[in-house]
Image 1: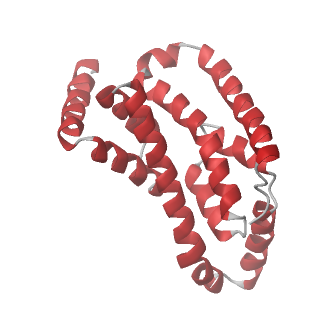
Image 2: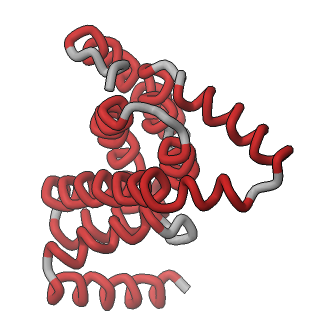
Length: 195
């Protein structure tokens, strides 16, 4: 079973090497838009194929671009349409939820984005449908995503070993705390709460 998995993995890595950096980048962008795709596997593939640093950088920029594209799609293309098709009761509930998203604290948003198990597509959709300032959303992405990418890259690249290693839970806590501390510093330096 593991031998077959390694063979398939090598086929994918060889294909990515042929396609190049753009292929690895587009793979991550696609995952950010289509939530059913396995992010940890794609980041792991980028790291295995292009090395730890380049694979990480490609994955980071790919996920930022994918999240922003998803945000823009819901903010500027689908928002009005979706609100029109919902029944009044549903629309009122969604509007209440979107008010909460609009007023979410910057630090909380960064931590939510940094947590590896947060469904990014839901955050992107909620941010796009809300009136959250785009500056606030993008800065939260820029600060929160590196930690999430690091975590999933580590898991993806070391999948079998990571299943046996409980130290990963400690790393999650450290990563989320670090994201929170960085968000506090950035919030003081840049006023992200304004448009």
